[in-house]
Length: 109
Image 1 (cartoon, rainbow, N blue to C red):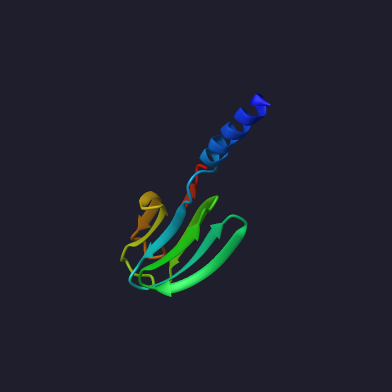
Image 2 (image 1 turned 60 degrees about the vertical axis):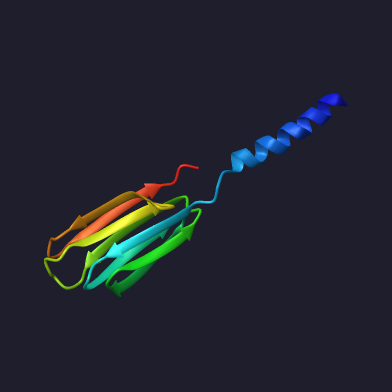
């Protein structure tokens, strides 16, 4: 009976510690002109378009991948960032007129 009591107490402390904290994944696209992007999170691929800076937030992603392209042929810089909580973990930028940038990050849970 004592063994069961200690096992129960041990499980109360070990299981929550193994579950970890919630993580917020975030993708930011920075470009003043028109762009299009494909964002992959888990098994979901989403195509988005926009102008200017845009942010996409994901709760507890397994991984995030972004591929963003300029649509206007300018020499201005396009940049993408992937965040884990408030820390940049991946990113890329280019000034190429037909520029495409990609970034990938797998979250370590």
